Image (cartoon, rainbow, N blue to C red; front, top):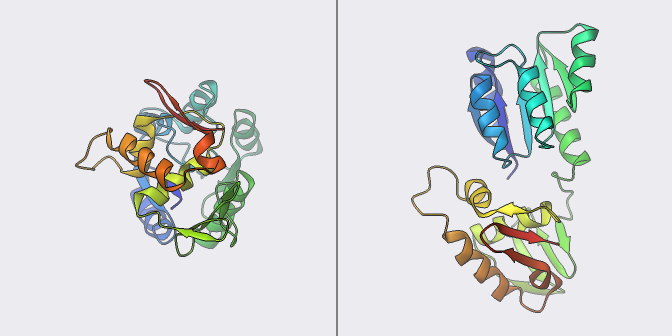
Length: 222
C-alpha cells in the first residue's frame, strides 16, 4: 500500500485530510517540522504532504534539508501561503507540487495520484513485473511466467517494495520500518528470514539472481 507522511499542525484540517487519505493509503501524521524531518529522513514514504507554517521548523527548512541530504521523496506543499514568491521558492528548493488552502479533497487526491504515477510509485492495472516475475496488485497474486507462486503477506509486500526501488540500496532497518512498521513485536532480523523465503520461492528467476545482499547494510535489486 502507498505510504504517505502528513506534516500538518492545523488539527481540524489534518484530521479531515488524514481520514480522507486513509481510504487509499497508509498514513503517518506528525504536527511539527522537527518530527516531520525526522520521519522523512527514514526514507520509507512514497510521498510527503508538507505544510509550511509549522512549529519548531517551518516547511521550507524541512524541504531544503531533505533535498540537501539527497532525499528525493516527492513533496507536495499544502499551505495558505499563496504568493507567487512563496510558490517559486518552494519549487526552487525542491517541491514537486504546491497546493494552496482551502482545497477540495478530490483535487488533493488527483495531485497525489499524478505525483505517484510520475515517480513510478502508483502502478497501473497490470501491476508490477521484473523479468518473468509478475505481480497482480489487486488480488496480490504472483506468477513466474504463467506459473502461480504463493507469496504470503509480508513476502508479497516486500517483493513489491523491492521492485518499486530497483537500483536503490535499502538498509535492513528501512525495510523493517516500511514493511513491518514501528509497532511490530518482532525484530529487524525478520528481514533476513523473509529475504531467504523469497529467494527460495523465486529461485532461478532474474529477480532472485539480481537481489544482492550488502553485508552489514541491506539489500539492492539491480
